[in-house]
Length: 166
Figure 1 (cartoon, rainbow, N blue to C red):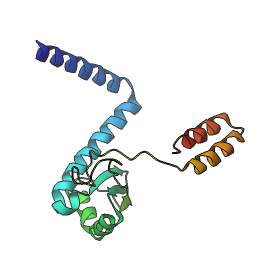
Figure 2 (cartoon, rainbow, N blue to C red):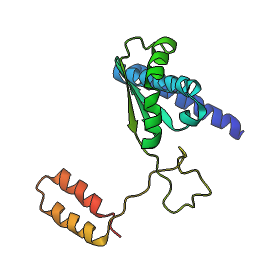
Figure 3 (cartoon, rainbow, N blue to C red):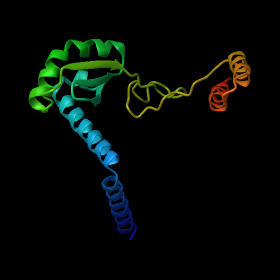
Figure 4 (cartoon, rainbow, N blue to C red):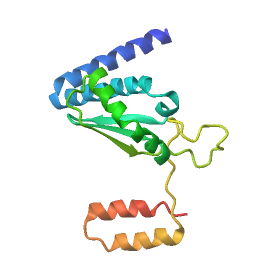
C-alpha cells in the first residue's frame, strides 16, 4: 500500500511540476537550459579521461561560451590544457556550433568540518560547504560596524555574518 501511495504522490508532484513549467515561458526556458547543461555535462564526462572528469562539471553555456568548474586550481590547470579538445568536441559532438571559448573556473567543494577525512573523499560532491567561523573579536567588530549602517537590509546581512563568531 505504501508503494502505491508513494507512486501516486510522485505522479501528482510530476504533474504539478509539468503544469508549473508549462505555465511560464521563462521558467520553461530555464528548465530546458538546465536539462541541456545536465546532458552536456554527461557527454563531457564521457569524453574526458576519468581522472579529469571526476573533478569538473559544466556550469553553464551561452551562444559563445562554455563554462566548466573544476574542484581545485590544479584540476583547473589540467582542464585548461584540454580547452582546444573540449571546444572541438562541444562543436562537433554536442551541437554547440557557435561556441568560441571555454572558460574554466575553480569552484571548490568543501568537506564537512568535523568529519574525519578517511570516511569520505575530500572532493566528494555529497559533502556540504563548511560553516563559516569568526573569532569572537572579529564577530564583535563586524557587529559594531553593522550597527552604524543606515541601510536596514545591509545592516541585517552584516549582523547575520557577525553571528558566526566563536
